[in-house]
View 1 (cartoon, rainbow, N blue to C red):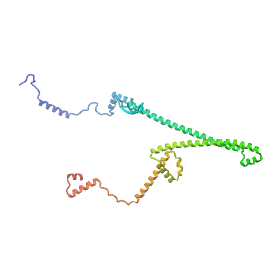
View 2: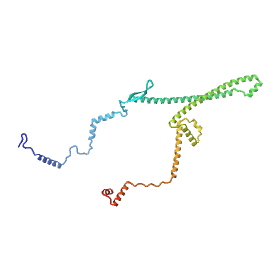
View 3: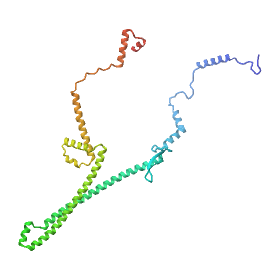
View 4: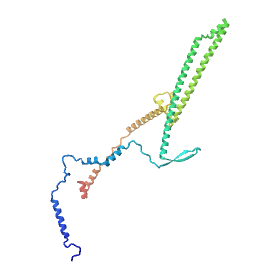
Amino acid sequence: MAIDGQALDAPDAGDDLIAFLEADDGSADAPIEPIDGDEPGDEPDNSDLETAEDDPAEDDAEDDESEADPDAPAKPATGLKFKVPIKGEDGADTTIEVDEKELISGYQRHSDYTRKTQELAQQRDEVQTTAMQKIDEGRNFFLQQAQLAHDTVSRLAGLKTPAEMAQLAQTNPSEWAAETARTQQINAVLQELNQASQRASQQREQEQGEVQRKAFSTAWGVLGQHGIDKPKLTKIFEDIATHYGVDKNRFATVTDPKVVLIMQDAAAYRALKAKAGAVTKKVAAAPRLPAQRQAAAPQERTNKRLEDKFRTGNAGLRDLARFV
């Protein structure tokens, strides 16, 4: 019975399925024709390159990358707080909070101050050394001139010997009195020259001693950082004196710590070399040990186990597969 609104001649579902399958079979047998534009030709396909060149998004990305400065420093993170202990205005210890930017800026100022302070100290030492050299040169020149003046006055004054003065006193007392006064005046001048030379020599010795004490203090500071104390330093000097035949008195003027470190390395090298020679002789004199038996390779051990199984009849299919 037909329902209102329903088509009377509706197609059968089975007929549609058969028609679909027949259409599938026909299309499978039909030759496949290439689609225009997909068939490969003699010229190379540059479509991907053209597409990449025409892509504005990629061009913008490349422009952004080219405009970026690779040498630009990375921006420090913001918002970080650090607690830094400092001395307050009253001298008491206190703690303040600083951000990362302030901390970096403070470190840079401290580093710059330290560098400039070290440079200033080095320049001051160089100036002092140069000044001391100039002063020492001037003092040496003065001592030379004072000695030259002393010798010149003594030679030109024509002072009489004690024997001549005794004879003159007997023959001509008045001339003896005048010669005696002249001799006293000349001797006073020579005495002043001698005293000036002595003062200059003493001052030079004091300054040289001060420079040497300062050099010794600096040297001990460096040697202490390398663990060298007085007993170790004495041992180093004794080793060098014994091995190289150096007079021990020459070590009294060594103020450069680098020289001492070189001596220490030389002594350590000789000790190590002597120890290595003794060990080599001991090893050469020791009896030879029997040669150790080398362990069989893993594959050889596996093959031996398989052969034992086949020989005893306990081999299975898996063993046969391994053997093959």
